[in-house]
Length: 194
Image (cartoon, rainbow, N blue to C red; front, side, top):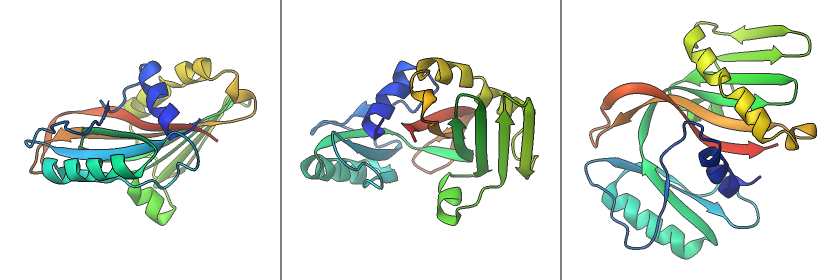
């Protein structure tokens, strides 16, 4: 499963995901908000693709137009959000691994370290926690885990020889001033098989 398929899979599974839309030349982005622009290729390597995160509407529109001319794929956009906690969820047939960090997922990607790792082994009925156990509350952990059965059901055939990796954040909406707005929510924004 590549990035493009992942965007559609998240939506199809009805997981809480970013409200993305495909960008078409001429689309107007509301200048009261900041925007994230991402892309996915129809074919070929789709790792480390260009993206723009948290940009004003005019800059985001120019970037999206440039991407549409350069990439053989789809350009998407969605409102920027402020992540308070982020991480990955790796689902296999008999194990779940959650890695998490404070703030944005890039904190984990850049350093290669996470603040907490939680390994739940269904076969052994065992849970191992390494790192800052207080980073995720029991409620937050349960909210992430509440989606595992849906993921396993949806990908039951793939899970015989692959794992499903999702990226997530507990986030808040924000305005143009980057100030958080409203209630915090769980959002998934990437899914792929590995």
